[in-house]
Image 1 (cartoon, one colour):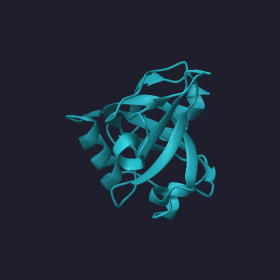
Image 2 (cartoon, rainbow, N blue to C red):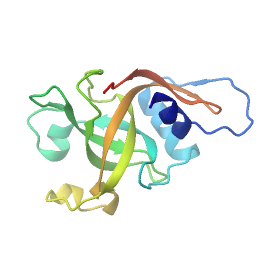
Image 3 (tube, rainbow, N blue to C red):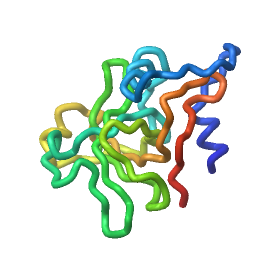
Length: 153
C-alpha cells in the first residue's frame, strides 16, 4: 500500500531530483497551494495542515484522540486559493500523534452532508477523507513529499 501511496503522491516531470527543503510546514503548504497539482477528486492524495479544531469548530481539543487511539482532525487541504477546511480521521491508531501545524498527506474519500455551519460555507468542506502520514517539509519533484511517519494498518 505504501508503494501505491508514493506513486499517487509523486509528480515526475523530468526535473532534477534535488529536494526542496522548506523552513517550516506552513511554507511547504503555501508552496503546494501555489505550484502543485491540487485537483479535488475521489482518492486524490493532497498535502494538508492540521488546524486547531477548538477555535475553528468548537471541539474540546485541538486534535481529538478517540477511545480506540485514532485521531479526529480539522485539516486545511491544499488548493489554489490557499486551502479549505475538512474534518478527517487518521488511517489507524498506529502512527504519529498529530498536533496543530503538522503537515499530513490527506486522501479524499467522498462528499457527505455536514451539520456544522462552518463546514457548509465551502462545498469542498463536505469531503471526507483520512490522513495517511505525517510529512516532512521536503518535496522532490520526482518522488513527492518526504514521509516523516506513516499511519500503519
